[in-house]
Image 1 (cartoon, rainbow, N blue to C red):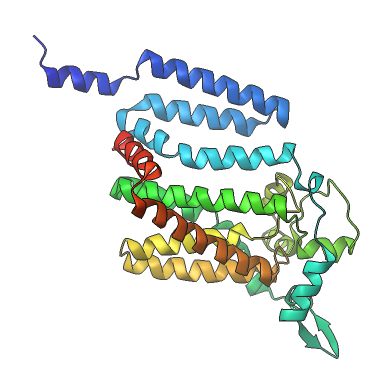
Image 2 (image 1 turned 30 degrees about the vertical axis):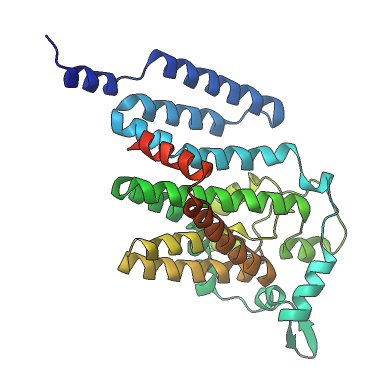
Length: 316
């Protein structure tokens, strides 16, 4: 006769038929909705295949897949922004943001006041080009790698970090629709005239590709959801959240590395003309707000706290 523990272990190893139906339905629904809204892309199949493979591979990969659904939600929402450009709903801020940047942080060169982006466009260096590219590339691998580390180290901290990451994106997406804003490179290429459907641009990161003779950033920015989403800079928000949770988890060496990466990304955002200093500062503000808001919701121990605890229990 099989013992209760044996039956439980066997059940844990295999997904239930009900769960399999849910996964199939959600996968098909996601692919169909994506096709309707933004058209078919190989990335969509890859996402479905990756989640499904991890879910059925083993009990631990199943929990890993469930945990990382938080990041999948972020990716899907970001992708769907292509279907509803923010400039449909609000006027895009181009000149006013540029003038504000110049007034607050302008640099005078030969009697002419320039934005910091314009200054670095005139004074760029190969070493800074390479370092900026490296720092900018880290905005996805560092949060994802840190999340994977926390998953295997502390599921509660993994969940808190992941949900804070999702929260800052949700707040950022709302801001993009309330305040559509052009990046510095747009002004450098098009002036203050608004051109809808403007494709993404590598701006200063093109120098990184040229140095290594690759098309890395070209491919990345061709997939951008909307170029008029510069304020706040979420690239600048992510490293602060990583740094906060690095400090919270007492990772002495890692938090030094995270601090360097954060400073590097903030500099690179301005140096490569992808963001104004104002964008960076608001990105930092949004990160701090998300951290404070999430901590407040957890401290209240209300419905949100209980839902989070149920999620943690499901992936432990």
